[in-house]
Length: 101
Image: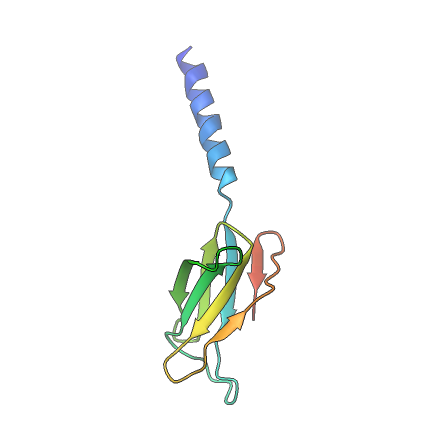
């Protein structure tokens, strides 16, 4: 009986984890004119349906970023002081991932 209860709880935990599958977005932010990476740029993920921010990160020394989101219906705002904010829409995930390059 104790084993059956433990197995049931383990099964429920696995189902809850699967229900919260994460989608990964990776990319790199560079200066359009020079091609140089932009360090510490802000990457904000927002919901398309609500327009509200749902997560974010900053780029590393090479301008790279990686973040996870629970939904695929998103867009990105890329910003840094002295640069025009850029919006990335129509993000298409393949097997839970997207590489924006």
